[in-house]
Length: 200
Image (cartoon, rainbow, N blue to C red; front, side, top):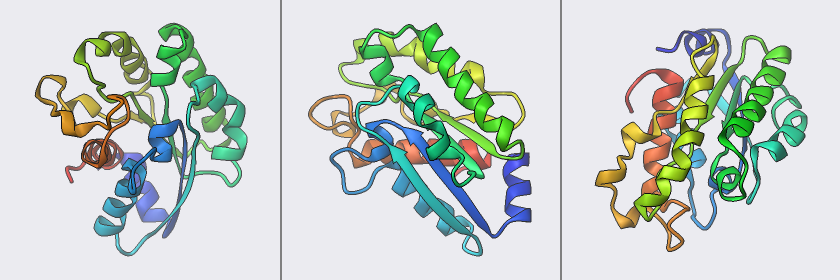
């Protein structure tokens, strides 16, 4: 089990999970998105704990917008688990991967400064359809992975749970960008695995 998560589970019975992200975190056009499914997994595997969710997913947002909203989203109240999910809008509006990484890095540092015992959970962009557009997104995924590894910062292994080559068209809505509930389920499993270091 992730050592930070293990300590959190041991020390607290009520845990605040706050989300800073875009339409994927918002759960665009589905009845249940990956955040809802993640909460279900946590409730199932840790029934003696209460997980309080503050979802600040905003459709169309970028990491820069997330940085602007950081205090209200992650620090008021202070999150025990800060989930940060961006990348697709950043890529498609022409922000460079290096600028994206720098902004997400600012979010991480600002949160850790006030919540040194908290967990930062980074969620990189999932695959999109058609597959060739994933080449544009790969540097943004890598940026998220590059920021992980320091104490208390983990990155969800989205690609391990959702292989581009094996993906079915039913994993997206008609726009090829937003996941269907099936796609969101894969995201939730990846995020849960990163948080707990345990399989679903």
